[in-house]
Length: 138
Image (cartoon, rainbow, N blue to C red; front, top):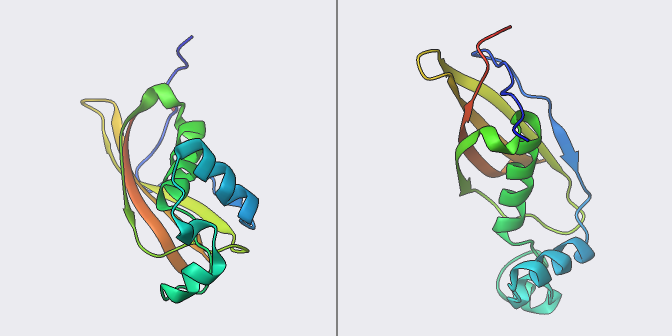
């Protein structure tokens, strides 16, 4: 069953989501699902020797959390494109704040462009954009 697109307006702030604090178990589960067993994600001593404060999550974990959040808001079948840029690592114990804004609306194509970000405290961890189908009815 296809759900109807949601109505969005230019400048609208999207309902935020908070995830965390991130645990070692979260990271290990994601590693198992994706097959990424880089020691940066499970071996604290290795991560510290690499110049990190400790174990970090894989960037795709944050990208997936951001994608899931925006898909929940607009319904996955209305998500037309999604791209991200990794800005900084996410460590165990940190909490992600997901947020976004409607940057533009194109009535001719019934689409909107969204700016997205995940922050930990005041630090951007991942930033992205999405193009989504929208309803023009208010």
